Length: 423
Image 1 (tube, rainbow, N blue to C red):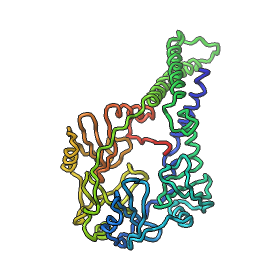
Image 2 (image 1 turned 30 degrees about the vertical axis):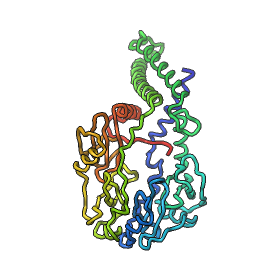
Image 3 (image 1 turned 90 degrees about the vertical axis):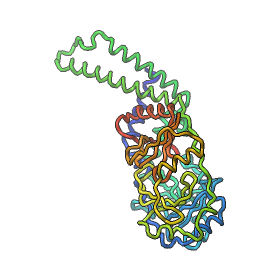
Image 4 (image 1 turned 180 degrees about the vertical axis):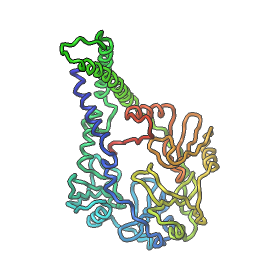
């Protein structure tokens, strides 16, 4: 207990800090305004012209810039690089200036503050994904030293950081006993201390229960309520012993057993040059649709469509309002079982069962939107019911891993939200 007692306290205190705070506030989600509506009527540049200029593009999406609508073109070989075009003229836009990055940050900040510094970073800190470099670091004059990290080409907010999040990162490092970068939950030090801790609480629980005076205590203090307090304390200790066993057992499992990644299903590439109708633009396809915050060309099981978004929560798995549009005639389109069956037949993977799970009923932790669940012989695949994006895949081992996560978080009754620390 001398060896593990301090670490048990650290686990308890760091865990208490992490679960006591709203994770969305820690992530700074409430510090960013909702996206502005796109000026669809100005998006007249033909999508065929975009596809012909960039034959290696993986897709294009319509977003609202500071002054006008923009088309963001992404590429197959590097999905994290992009080119921005004026959605009306097709003019390619240069990398953002520091002044533009500052203006974007102030425009997207939900509070009231000034900017103290703007820095272009070619090499980014560990908590900013390196694949997005270069980024602008925009520092606000807030009490918690808020920073936005803005993609230097697209103007997207890659991530946010503030003092409470930096403290959270250190609590995570202390919690998983990785004092370097907080990325390795499979380190040997954690596994050894967790094993010793499990042994110590097991022995302590046995000794506590086996004491002859567990319910009958001879007391030197002649106060009747003291005996009852002592007995209650012992029963509470047994409850704590049980939960500590769950925490340590599941934590040790998660540290020892690395979750195996199930390969994504293959998706047929689309040659956008040959599937987009001549001279059609975002404005043509969306002119009679409700106000939107974005739209993009979407690969639906190898077939081309347009997906527009009316509203979206903080994260992709939050409740959203999206709709598919047929590129050929602009009519609305919904994914049905026949498209799923045709795709799985094409990739030669037999289906045992297809189930549509409505909003809020998905068995993926934290997923609030409607999904399609496709069960094959050994694996269940989940697709967003609106966009057909593959969300998750589970086999038996993956479900055991997910169960251990639920037990470790004490998430017994709700869907829960998986917190991913770091990137």
